[in-house]
Length: 258
Ligand SMILES: Nc1ncnc2c1ncn2[C@@H]1O[C@H](COP(=O)(O)OP(=O)(O)OP(=O)(O)O)[C@@H](O)[C@H]1O
Image 1 (cartoon, protein in one colour):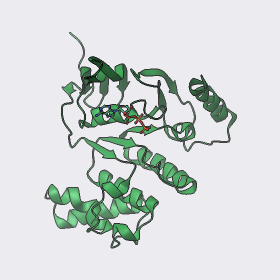
Image 2 (image 1 turned 120 degrees about the vertical axis):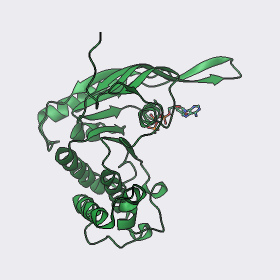
Image 3 (image 1 turned 180 degrees about the vertical axis):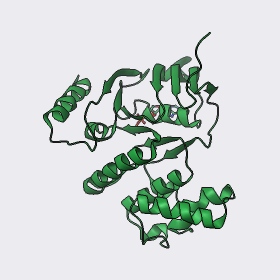
C-alpha cells in the first residue's frame, strides 16, 4: 500500500484543464498533464510567459477552478473547493479590500467572521499590521493608501486568517520597482518567520530568484506543463549581485529565448 503523504504536501498528478471549442469540435488544453509535488513550508515559484496557465494552475490549487483531468491533493485529500487552509493574494488589492473598512477592520474581517473575540482579534491584527510595516496606519481607509500599502493590507489580512498555504498571483506585479523590491524582501522575511507554504506566480525571473527555493518553469501554452524545476542553492536574503545569481538568471532566461 502507498505511504500516506504528510498532511501539508500538495500533490499535482497528471493535472489538465481543457475547454471545448464548439466550432472546431475539439478540446483546447490550457495545461496538460502537469506533475508537481510541493512540500509543506516550501517557497515554490511558478514562472512562465504571459498566458501560459500559471493563474489557472494556482486557481485550481485554490479550489476556484476545477480540473478536467488528473489528481490534485493536499495530503490525501482531493481539492474540490476553496478551504480555510488556503488563501490567495491577488495582483490588484483594490478588488479584494473592502473600501468602507479601515486597515484594521479589513485585516480583522475574516477573524470576525470566525467569531474570534474582539481582544484576540486586536492582538492578531496588531501583530500582522506590524509585520507588514503598516503600524500607525490602522485607521486609514484603502482610498488613503498607496498601491504598495494596499498590497500590504491584503497580505496582513491573509496572514491573520492563518492559512497553511499562501497562493500568490503576481502580487507585486502592479507596483513600482522600488516598492516591489521592498515587498519582496519583506515577504521573504515573513515566510521565514511563519513557515507557511507559499506558491508564488510571476513572469519575472529576478523575482523568482529572489524568493523561491524551487522555481518551476511553465512552457508556453497551449497544453502548457512544467518543463523544468530549478533548485536555488542560494542563502536568504538573496543577493542579486552574486555571480551564481546571474548564472541561474541566464540559464532560466534561455528557456524563454527559444
Ligand atoms: N474560462 C476560460 N475559457 C477559455 N480559456 C480560458 C479561460 N480562462 C483562461 N483561459 C485561457 O487560458 C490561458 C491561460 O490563462 P492564465 O490566466 O492561467 O495564464 P497566466 O500564465 O496566468 O497569464 P498572465 O501571466 O498573463 O496572467 C489563456 O490563454 C487564457 O486566455
